[in-house]
Structure formats: structure tokens, C-alpha cells
Length: 215
Ligand SMILES: Nc1ncnc2c1ncn2[C@@H]1O[C@H](COP(=O)(O)OP(=O)(O)O)[C@@H](O)[C@H]1O
Ligand SMILES: [Mg+2]
Image (tube, rainbow, N blue to C red; front, side):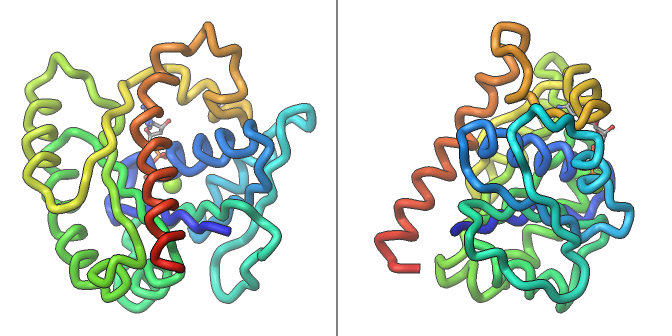
């Protein structure tokens, strides 16, 4: 079982979009997926409530407070709230095998994320290589200057970046329907699906490294 924490204290950075789509990906591959929602706004759980029964099953979990880790799950994906910090953040990082930090190309997002990455770097399980961290750009329009600034920021960071997801209407449409990109006919979203490859590749590789370390 592996646990992925999706975190960035900045609201609107793309956490729920990333968490729900990642859950949809693993479910589409026949994996047992738990989507755990730490956010009192319950956006991820509401997405799950909208999810049609005919789509691959994802189990929902209220991730606030204490909960038993679902040992039968192949993947537990945790959507976290804006402003996650302090002891709650430390505990969530410690419990996670992976932390993925989504961020949008804006000066405000870069400022907030820079501080957050510094906090992550001080977490023991990250320093010891037990929890792996990566970053992904969300709603990136490559033609913009903001996108270029984001690339420079990501390149200078100590954590690897696993690409960008472009700004695409399909994310909002899928979200409305309780679907992920991986539930849509691939020919309709082929360009967007391609952009997920580096993230999925990184997860597989990092998981192998952890297996070698015996986590
Ligand atoms: N790649 C994308 N393309 C278009 N819209 C996106 C993309 N990623 C996120 N969004 C939109 O951005 C908004 C904020 O994303 P959300 O996942 O709710 O962020 P958070 O959970 O961090 O607050 C939502 O309306 C979502 O649909
Ligand atoms: Mg959210």
C-alpha cells in the first residue's frame, strides 16, 4: 500500500483536481483506491458523490481527525486543505510515501509555495528519503511569461518537477461529473493524458526505490 499526500497551503493551486484525477487513474487500472479528504469543504468527497456507478470504483474516506489506514488499498490519495501546516502537516507528511505539490503559475503561488517547500525540506521523513516529494505545474499556458517564471522556479528547486498540466476546460467538466480524465474516451483528451506521463512515471520509479529501501 502506498499513500500520496497532495499538498500546497495555497488555495486554488489544484490539489483537488490532482487528487481526484490521480484516484481516477489508479481506479481505471483496476487498483483499489481510497480517496481521503482532509478538507472540511469536502470537495473531493463531493466529487465522489457525483461519480456515476458505472465508472471504476473509488472508496471515499473522511480524512479529518483519526482514521484507520485502509490496509487493503493499493493507493490512498489524500486531498488536503488550504493552510495545512504545523503538527497536522508533519503528521500527514510522515504518514505519506509521496507528497505531490501542485502549483499555478502566478507570483502569489510561487511565493506561498517557496515557503512551503522550505518547511517540507525540514521534515525528517523527507530528509531521510522515506517520503518522496515532487512538484507539478497546474493550468500552465506555455505562451505566457508567468509559465516561464514558473519553469525557472521549478528548475531551481531541490525537489524534482514532473511536468505541467495545461489549462483545459476538460478538468472543470470532468469535475462536475465526478469523472477524471482517465474516465473519458482517450481520443478526446489525448494531449492532456500525455501530460500525466511524467508524474505517473515518477511515482512508479520512486516506489521501486522505496521497495529497495524496504519502506
Ligand atoms: N489543468 C487545469 N485546467 C483547467 N482548470 C484547472 C486545472 N487545474 C485546476 N483547475 C481549476 O482550478 C480551480 C482550483 O483547483 P482546485 O483543484 O479546486 O484547487 P485546490 O483544491 O488547491 O483549492 C478549479 O476550478 C479547477 O477546476
Ligand atoms: Mg481543494
